[in-house]
Image (tube, rainbow, N blue to C red; front, side, top):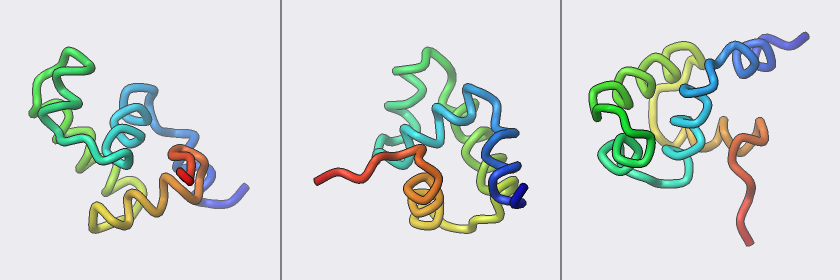
Length: 75
C-alpha cells in the first residue's frame, strides 16, 4: 500500500469532511457553522491534516483532495 493511501485512510471522518469542505473553498468559519463546531476545532483539524499529509499550503491541500477522490473535479 502506498504511503499516501494510508494517510488518506487514517483520516478521521470529521477530519475528512473538513478536508473536503476546505478543498471546496469554504472558510473555516463557514465550516464551523455547518458542522456545529468551533472555528478553532476546524483550524485544529486543518493543520493536523496538513501535517499528516505533508502539505504546506491550501493549494497543495486542494490538489491532494483532487488526486485522492475527496474533491470531485467540477466541469
